[in-house]
Amino acid sequence: MRKNSIKNTRINGEVQRELSRIISREIKDPRIAPMTSVVDAVVTSDLKQCKVYISVLGDQEAKDKTMEGLNSAVGYIRRELAHTVNLRNTPEITFILDDSIEYGVEMSKKIDELQK
Picture 1: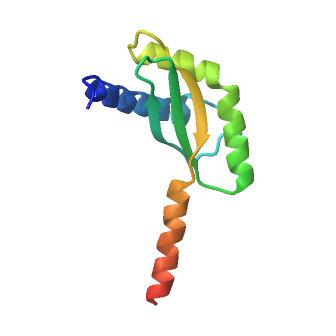
Picture 2: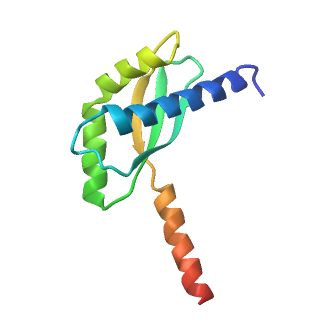
């Protein structure tokens, strides 16, 4: 285990919380679905890159529009992150669509159906 892994875990958690807040409360883009959540944020140890895993509840069109809205607002989101999280560098943000929550819900429904 590297010595900065605890620090990196703390940074990832803080960035994830702030991005959730910014996306849900600050951005007024109608393309972004109301049921959009930040599943995870992974900041590289040099603080230059950040992969943000996004979950969107809805159909494929809602997911596409949400990703389009987030990508067009990435500059604003990055500036807001720079104001609230005190880091040496504000990382470049890359949004990645994460279907794991939706997949889990689907599997849970199938298990429930099998049990009946």
